[in-house]
Image (cartoon, rainbow, N blue to C red):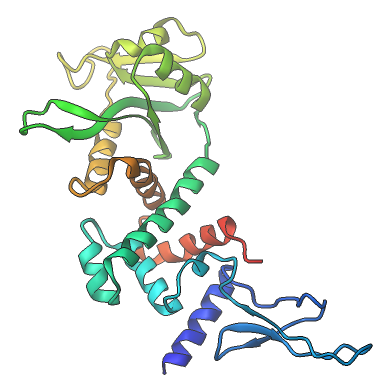
Length: 289
């Protein structure tokens, strides 16, 4: 039964392009796949000297799943749990898959690495004529004595495109006008209607002819009474981000990975389809050789 299950998993990963279905030997001849060992082998004799080829290679070599000696069934189960379970999940994955904590940590990092690469490669722009983009910045970090004063953390600039619900996040060093305007000009197309709060870092937009700019003063109103401008969509998105990032036990140097994880999962809200799309991204980032 276990051999059959492993064989089905191999075929499943081959369909998604994560591992090879065929492989050429170094002698130039096609290898034979040994399903019991999950290895490509070549035993052909050389016609010139009669020497038999002794090539052997694991189907997991040079693939995303070659980073562990755990069975493919355990790895796929662990990845599925990572894709579908909310934080905190480490203990639950250990119990469900029956693996050690270091395996869960390692594979969580491997999966987040895929999300990071995807977020970077899909560095698309938002907006354009007739489009509305809400912008805002938020700081993620530790708080002392629950007073709300952030001692340290990471500023993140975010945009939300109305209608399409597309968004992007970009960690920034600070929220000065120079920093924020650099990201805005790089990621938001001319002709966009931009809406923000009244943070002074956005003041250059008041005189920027590339954009139509509306702002709302949150110290006075949630919705501007004159223009109707509001930033409720991106504020809701920040709540989703905070709920999707662990508050305890989070290593600060892993923050970008958690942000990328949220970004990736937000694109695929259907839990039943996440594994399919994730494995497609795995195949693109780790093309088997």
